[in-house]
Image 1 (tube, helix red, strand yellow):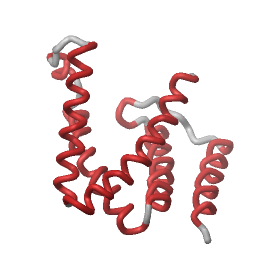
Image 2 (cartoon, rainbow, N blue to C red):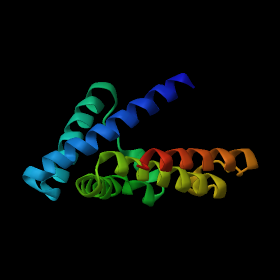
Image 3 (cartoon, helix red, strand yellow):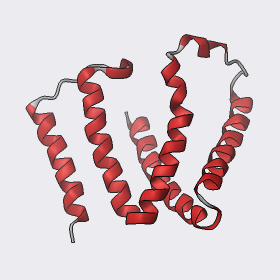
Length: 143
C-alpha cells in the first residue's frame, strides 16, 4: 500500500509540474507543437525503458478491449486541456478543478463498476468524505 501511495504522490507532483512546463512551452511554440513534443519525448523514454527491462512483445494487445487503446488519444486531450486551463485560469485553479472532477468521475466509475473496476458502493461515510474533499478544494480556491 505504501508503494502505491508513494507513486500516487509522485504522479501528483509530476502532473502539476508537467502542466506548468507545458503551458510555458506552449507560450513559445504553440499547443500542437507542445503536444507533439510531449508525447514524442515521452514515447522515446518509455520505448528505451521498455527495451531495457521488458520483452518487445505486443501480441497480448489483441486480448484487451479496443477502447483501452485510447489512452494515447486521451493524453493528447489531457495535455491540450491542461495547457489551456493553466494559460487561462492559472495552475492552482486548473489542478483543483481537475482533482474535483477526478474525484467525482472515479467515484461514479467505481459505483457502477465501469471498465472492469470493482464495484464500490457509496456509503454515507464515503459520501461525506467525498463532500469534505471537494469542499476543502473549493475552500482552498476562495479568496
